[in-house]
Image (cartoon, rainbow, N blue to C red; front, top):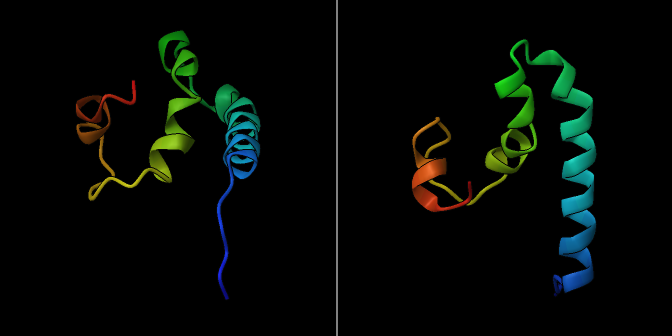
Length: 62
């Protein structure tokens, strides 16, 4: 199976991740954390080797 990822796919996935962020935003107690809620699901699916709090800012995705 030769699946090609298109720009349209990436845009659609990004929108879906934004929807996920809106759903989880209320779960973060502090205002500062709620503001960063969109970063959380995107960090989970990022191609980083480790998924803790340090690689994300270092990768430049913030």
